[in-house]
Structures are given as C-alpha cells and as structure tokens.
Length: 112
Image 1 (tube, rainbow, N blue to C red):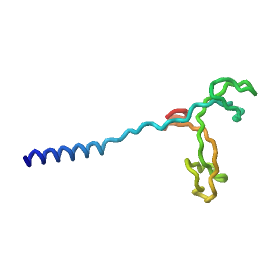
Image 2 (spheres, helix red, strand yellow):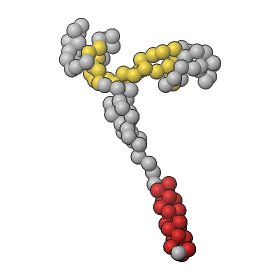
Image 3 (cartoon, rainbow, N blue to C red):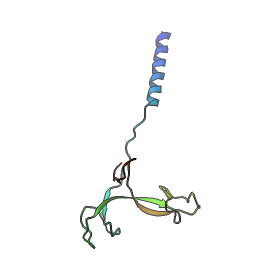
Image 4 (cartoon, rainbow, N blue to C red):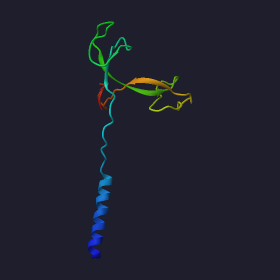
C-alpha cells in the first residue's frame, strides 16, 4: 500500500511542477469602447463613425481612457493618482488615446 501512496504523491508533485512551468494565459483586459474624433478638431467626439461638423473630414476611431500625468514631465503617465517619479509633483487627471504597436511594425493599432 505504501508503494501506491508514494506513486500517487510523486505523480501529484510532477503534475504540480509541470503546471507551474506552463505560462498562464489570462483573459485580455477589457478595452475602452471605440469613439470617433476629428484629426483637426480633437474636441469633436462622437460614439459612431461620421464626418466632422466643422471641417467635414471623416472621423477617425480612438480608444479613450483616464490616466494621471505629471504637469511638467508629460511622458510620466500612470494609471493611478500619485506623484511624479522625477519631480514629486502631484499628477493631474488626463484623458489619453490608447494605441498599440508591435516590434518591427510602425503602425498603431486600436487592439492588442
């Protein structure tokens, strides 16, 4: 009986070791919805495709999200309130446009 119990223990340990080594795939984060804006008039914001009411250019899709940015170091953007890691000023709330790019690809994409 000890031999069977030992074999089961070894099998359980091997299964745990193998599953710990496999990369875990997490569910992709939910993306903000698509909005549409004018390339020349960013204050124009619509929830569906169309044309800019000011210049009649086609609206372009964007994904907008809220973030926090340093008022001096505009490259410091965080997902939560806090202070700038460079100058310690309080971060201010901003709306950012999200895009993704792949290594070797200069295009910007609206999805991962």
